[in-house]
Length: 227
Length: 404
Image (cartoon, rainbow over all chains, first blue to last red; front, side, top):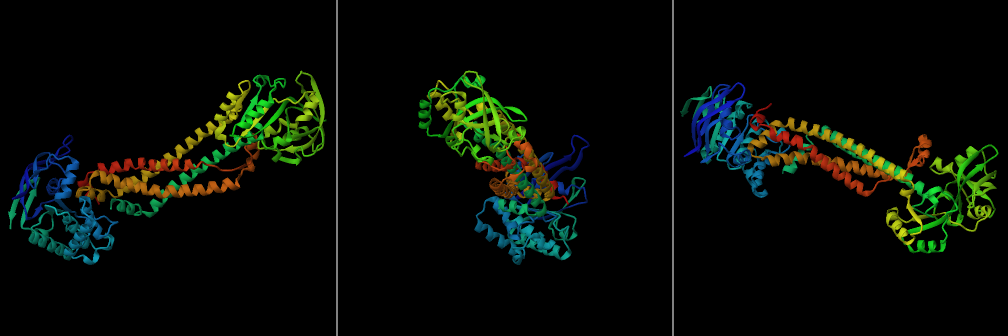
């Protein structure tokens, strides 16, 4: 069943001045349990596509359906709620809250969802254990390496039981060992829990591990390969 | 947890937060201290005027105050005494016998108000007996004693025990003169009072004027200044044949000065609040812009705008809730201290004396003002944080998360 359905999506920036088309009629369907990498050169539109799929940006034209819900015309606050309950995000720069510990960072999303304290703590501990950071639960981001921070970010993305995880260049700031470690965790989650992952990436290591690779060029899908 | 994050965010940049907290505390301290100083000045000025002889309420023959002619005196003093003794808000009163005249020494002469008093009852009302700097306040039985102000003594070039000649018009418009001996010299906070008022024994004055016991003026003192208006109304109703006036009816300039100082103070407080607001806006705006990527992440992952707004609002609130009490407690301690020991402004004493204030100022502030200022500070902080909070909400989350 299609989890994400992108239909004829266009995105034009600076419509009133000099219009720049970032996406030109993209059609795409991503099923549950996929491990998909969106690749392409800089300016090809992969981040724009990821932002639109994640409800962080809106399409100029076309429609987007996520988990059976058309989110194309949702209001800002509805989109925020939708993101909270359906999408997990992993960012290139980790973007953890620096004043909170690893456990609190993971708990934070569940807090926004209104989870009880005990359940929050329990799930945060479980997730941090799954990403191999049991001993770092009380460490703040500044006390962790980049790889460890990104693993906390993955745990945070999974905390809210999202329908899928969007990861924007998640390994761009990581060394090889950290990248492999992170990918191992994601692949395992994908295989064990059927968690859907969608990446935008330049990183060949990620592309190698992906089971589907969508290549964008000049705002259009150039190729869509299942491995 | 939003409160917890907000609290921790406050301490991310300790130096900046401490500077802002200090500026809030200093602003509040300065505002409250200035208010207490002004209130103290005003209270002292009014208090000095009231205690020196103005009283809280004065009662006269209705014609007396038109030309201050002693022929208009209160006839039924028995009814007056009975009425005054029946009003519970009245603490004490004294009868005056007033004449306008001249005092002449061998070197010069000056126009003055001659106040005939009963020294015994006067001690229960006015405070002149406590202002004696030389000699005594009618303590012996000697006749024709006069107590004059220090400034008048200087102008007349007389000292204690010197004789001076008092000339005035009696109730039949005859010019009367008599020699009086200076037995006391007083000094109040008001130099203009000191140069224009002389106190004499009422009996001596009446004997010289050849009149029986007459009363031109009744000075009434209350337990609480707040009771002036109802007591005045009560007296006006009970004594319809007499003119009853409160201190601010008699000396409206005292009230005007009060209003003027209130306006000046409001402007001062407004300036402090504006400065504080801009400080908060600047600091919080910097805090928001510095954390653009993090705020973008929060919005991206599903923190709604209300919560983002509330987080920034909370940060400002915490800063003001730290700075506010420090300023208020500091101000309370300072005001309390100088309320007891006073601030010695003798370097500008002459100026203050001419204003009737005195050279030592005792700070004073109503406890309600502390509460008012606390509320104003918290509201100001909250209002000042609205703009930075709105800036945070307006940001494009997708762009913000990718910023370096």
